[in-house]
Length: 425
Ligand code: PMP
Image (cartoon, rainbow, N blue to C red; front, side):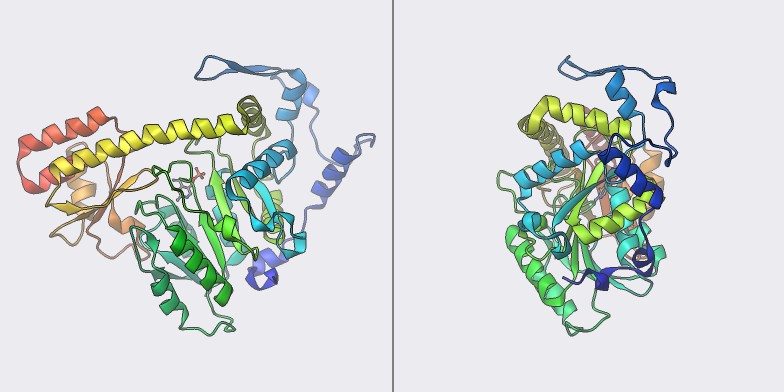
């Protein structure tokens, strides 16, 4: 594939930071006398060791030698051992067809990012020039929308339902362009599992059709999948990455939902020429993710092994499934007839459409708040956020089932239809 067609002007102009090249060289040839880089001397750092206690009572020890590494600069793409661990994880879960391709043909490559948000921001910087067309389903993740708007691109809404993007609708939209037209959208962005805020999850069949359209019209697919490990059904649809025979999928993963959001560790998997561009961006922005948190995460992964990690994510998904069911029970009890929703198969959100009103903005930002309930009005998640929306996003990640129930009790006392609604979600 010719990746140059996809690069923004900024990204095409990016070059590798020469200071980073000498650091890489020094790492590979340990006998070199290192006078080039600005590495501080780790012997002078004040922190010597750490002992971290896990929820099962066992500990992770970081001794003096490992701590020196943990406190030092490291590679922009992530510490090598962690990157290798993540590669093995992607092979196990997604088995990407591109794994054995030549780098220039889009071989799968990984770089660690400061959460998936950082990865997304760098992907958009890499791809988008003002005036470019970008496809996405609506409603969609608010930070993606707020990140994209200032880049001056045209965000094109693709009709969707509880199973995500509707392929025929996408096909209709794409038929506005001939495949060779240079204005054809460069990329499609979607959250394939447990959409934020929609709670929708793409089916395997739809993913295949969308991938076919991506081939036909030559656009990239940005698969932002933070809720991959929070899927509540037995059968899981294959990811876009696992369908990617061309090297046109850029996938964002994160440990925010299953290990720690404060660690700020995510990773991007995609074709080597594009991941290299993200790494060049990292070299001149964040420089790298914190070595300390990468070392700590790696020690955790070494302790667990791949199976232990996957068992952990299963346990977390079981907990959130219960939360989801509590939310659904509260909604069923109090909102039937007043609103509509579907059961999210993944993620943390219930997307509720209120009947008989055109906009939830005031109801949520003033009235619900006065009653002590914080929710998000639907507008925030629309491509044009100035337009009214009858929807609400309710998150079931944080409130305990008791709190959800408590809100229901308050509401049953009020008896007033509208109050009853917003107190219960
Ligand atoms: N994408 C989506 C769809 C999200 O919901 C979130 C977090 N709310 C992110 C990306 C960012 O996650 P991270 O903490 O990994 O940056």
